[in-house]
Amino acid sequence: MDLPAYVARRLLQMVPVAVGVTILVFFMIHLVPGDPARTMLGTHATPQRVALLHKEWGLDKSLPVQYERFMSRLVHGDLGDSLFYRVPARQLIVDRLPVTLWLIIYGTGLSILIALPLAAVAASRRDAVRDQVVRVVPLVGLGFPSFWVGIMLLLAFALNSGRFFPVGGYGHGFSGHLRAMFLPALTVAIAIAPILIRSLRASLLNVLESDYITTARAKGLPERHVLVRHALRNAVISTVAVLGVNIGYLVGGTLVIEQVYALPGVGQLMINSIFQRDFPVVQGVTLVFAILVVLVYLITDIVHSLLDPRVRFE
Amino acid sequence: MSVAAADAFVEAELTERRHGFRSRWYRTPAFVAGIVIVGTVLGLAILAPVIAPYDPTKQDLQNILQNPSGKHWLGTDQLGRDVWSRMLYAARIDLRVGFLAVLLPFLIGTTLGAIAGYYGRFGDTIISRLAEIVVAFPFYVLVIAMVFVLGPGTRNIYLAVTAVGWVSYMRIIRGEVLVQKRQEYTLAAQAAGLSNARIIIRHLIPNVITQAIVFAMSDIVLDILLIVTLGYLGLGIQPPTPDWGTMIADGQTFLTVKWQLSTIPGMAVVITGLGLSLIGDGLADLLRPE
Image (cartoon, rainbow over the protein chains, first blue to last red):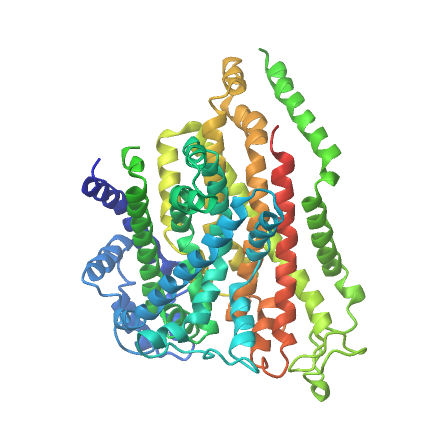
C-alpha cells in the first residue's frame, strides 16, 4: 500500500472514533446530577435565567434532537458560549492553544534529548553498572507527580539563589518562549522520558543482537558508529509507536503543568472554567484535547510507516 | 478427557508455578525491597491514629510555619497544624483511594477482555471500539471532566477512574486470551465438552491474569498520582482531610520561606511509587513462566 492510500485508510478508521468522541462529550451534560442548568448557574440564579439556558442548550428536546443540534453547531465550529466570559468558547480555546502546543512540542523534544543518550549508554553494555543505573531511572521516574517536579524545578532554578528562569509566564518572541518555557517543558520531559528510556533500551538491545550488527562489527566499524548509525536508527522505530501511545498521557499532563507555571494555555483554561462552573468551555476543551490526541495518533502512525514501510502492508 | 481430568491437568501446572513463587520470592531483591517500602508506608498509614502525635486538623495559630523541632518533627503548616501527623493521615486516605481505585477497572477490564478475546466477533468489535474512544481522551482530561460533572468526592473519583481505567486491563487480557485460546490445553478443554464459562474462568483466566496483576501495580502508582494531582488542583480530597496533593499545593505559597512544606509530601509520593514499581518489577520476574 502506498503512503496516500495508507493515510486515507487511517483517516477512514478514525471516523467511528471521532463520532464516538462527540457522543461521549455530548453526554457530559447529562451526567450532571439534577438539573444541569441550575447546577451550573448556582443557587442564586433566577428562574428566567435557568429557563433561558434550558432553551439555549435545548434541554427540553429529545436526546437525538439534542445530539443533532450539538453536531450541526459543532461542524460549524460552534462550541457554545462561555457562561462566565460571555464570548464563544471556541475563541477562548483558540487563543490559548499555541501555548499548549508549544509546551507539548518543546517537552517532547527535550524528552528525546534526554532519553536517546541514556538509552544508548545503557544498551551499549548490557548489565554493566551504567546499564543498572539507567534501568533505575524509569522505576523511580514513573512515580514522580509532575506538578511536584515542577515545583522542585522552580525551587532549584527560579527562586532563592538560582534565578535562571522566570517563575511563570509564556515569554515574548521565539527566544523568549524558549527561555520562559524551558522549565515547564523540562517538567513534561521528565514525565515521559522514563517511558521512552525503557522502550528504547529494550529495542536497542534487541536490535544489537541482529545479524547485520554482527556484520557491521565484523567489518571493523568502530562501536560508536555501529550504535549510532546502524542500531539506533532501527531501534527508534518502535519507540515512535511507544511515544504515540503515551502522547495522550503527555497531553493530559500539560493541564497540571500549566497550572504550576501559570501558563495561559488550554489546560489552565479548563481548570479555571471548572471553578467558574463554565460548562461549555470545559466541554469544548475536553473535545479539543481528544481531537488533539487522535491527530497525534495519526501523525505517529504516519511517521512510523515512513520509518518502517512494512507496517503499511500488515 | 473428562471434566475433572481437564481441570486437574491445569491445576497441577498452576500448583507448580505457585510453589516456585513461594520458594523464590525472597531471592528477588527488587521484590523484597518493594515489599519493605510499601509495607513500611502501609504500616505507618494504618497506625496513624496510634503514632500521630497531634490531631491532623487541629489548628494552632500561635505556632504557624514552624521549623522542624523536637515538638513538631516536620514543623507546622500555615495554620499551625503538625506536618508529621498530617503526613500520616494523608497516607491513609491517598493509599486507600489508590488501592481501591484499581479494583473495579481490574474486574471490569478483565471480564470484558476475556469476553472480547474468547468470543471475538460482534462483542469484540463493540468492546474494542469503545476502548478506542475512551483512549482518545487524555487520561487526566477525561477524569477531571468527569469529576467536574459528577461533583467532587471519593465515590465520584472511583467512578471516573473506572470509566477510563478498564481499557488497559481489557487490552492486556484480550491480547493474552487471543494467544491462549489457540493453545492445546484450551482445545483439549473444548474437546472434552467443558462449557465456555468454565474454560474462561477455570483455565484461561489463571493463565492470563499475571500480566494484569503486574500492570495493576503500576496502575496503583498512577491512581495515587491522580488522587494527589486532583488534590493539588483542588478537585480531589476536600479540606480539612489531609492529602499529600493539597499539602503540596498549600506549601507552594510558602516555597521561598518554608521549602519543606511542598517537598516532604512529594517525597512520600515518590517513595510509595518506587516501592510499588519494585513490587511490580519483581512480580513480573517471578511470575514469568520458565
